[in-house]
Length: 324
Length: 245
Ligand SMILES: Cc1cc2nc3c(=O)[nH]c(=O)nc-3n(C[C@H](O)[C@H](O)[C@H](O)COP(=O)(O)OP(=O)(O)OC[C@H]3O[C@@H](n4cnc5c(N)ncnc54)[C@H](O)[C@@H]3O)c2cc1C
Image 1 (tube, rainbow over the protein chains, first blue to last red):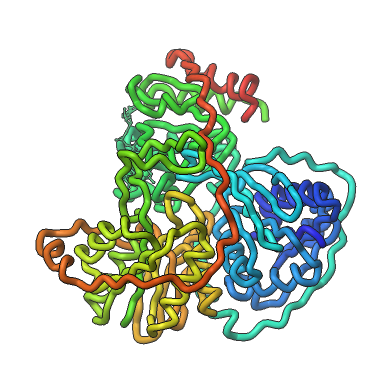
Image 2: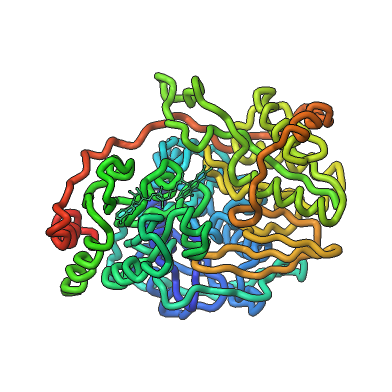
């Protein structure tokens, strides 16, 4: 029995969300009296994998087959399933990302496992069952889910737990190969188009987001400059993406993406319930809006009732003055 | 081309969520149920594909009779026929097993659905269905075109997108901006009444998770307002008080 953690990598690095998954996996392993093992796929620096030891991972199985360079669900699921079998994993932890949840769902069907997404806390263990807390109704509520199957899969939401690396141990890295067929690679991407140079929205600890109150794309430098000064990612409300002031992958909310950064700064956004649904798991919410009746102030921790064109330049100046 | 579109029945997006006194059930009094918004992208894209390539669109819902109003709405928007699997959808695996069983009976080229439902936010059913059928799944997709037996898709990845080609059949989960959801017109509503809605009993299946209780988040203690004239003060509060920068 062990806890297996799927380690998601991009650009040769372990993603920050996977460090959280590793740390969480180790906590679960401690609860169960076992150890946490990682499985990593594709190109990633060996030091990055060894570094997972600081997050409690004892060993990482690393499959480097060339065709696995890009994510393809069927192939990746086979690798993770083979690793789970090799390590007799009773719990598998993934990050609640597009790739993590894509793997989780297939894996659950394949292993006849219990599977919970959007998990925000460590499990309560009683006998053969685990109980986890997850967000439901687009972040408007929580549910306690009881996982009863022999194998349990948990997709951990970003920023849900405090991570404290120990700064000592190194994880052992072991080569790992899985037999794969051509059919497993159906759906291999022809082309990948990435926004470059930005902080990735889904991985960001701080997000600066703009709404219709910005009036037009020509004013977006206010959002970008503030984000830059804070090391933040940028986001937007739905109407802003609909009129193509901003790309669709920046649109947060009920029909866009869901994020849970430590700090969400909403600039010129009214805070309609569908927008809130995508951001209400943020730890601290700041709202800047000239309308004191804007619904967003009800969800906010800090607020400024004022004109974005006056307020944001002051914030940029103050943020730039911070010693990093 | 034969397309199966899976729709779920969810509380309207503006619903204020509350629970029964034992916190075991959603309070449905006064709640309007709608077609899951992500599923509408799947439905309208399916209808567009049928309009340009020919074929049929079948909508499928796993749920009890109270979902039929929204199934009729999907028919009014342009689906040809509908299937309801008569079982309470208690977890994703149970739903996926029902969908896979239906998909196996007929040679569908595409199984489309939304990327997640806005009630339980599972993000699970598409992957499970694909695995049970042994098909590829493209999750979540923002663009879908079909030519011959090949689908060309754009899949959203964190911070970008990928262009993917895949041989049919395939499971696709949809999200904005795949299509522009349509509102049913009068003619659609009239013809929907006569379109076939078949009710079938579930295949034997097993739920793997159980929701034990719900809870609402703790209320925020209230917003701390900062004078716009001293807006810069916010930055020091975020550093020294909230400790988030
Ligand atoms: C099914 C459904 C799904 C939806 N999904 C989403 C979703 O995923 N994400 C989403 O964001 N929305 C979503 N919406 C839309 C949502 O209901 C709102 O319409 C939208 O969030 C409003 O965007 P906004 O706040 O940018 O614009 P507005 O509502 O126009 O608000 C602009 C705000 O800016 C303020 N403002 C204007 N000028 C200034 C200024 N100079 N200085 C300071 N403040 C200023 C105004 O006071 C106002 O509060 C959805 C709607 C539906 C029906």
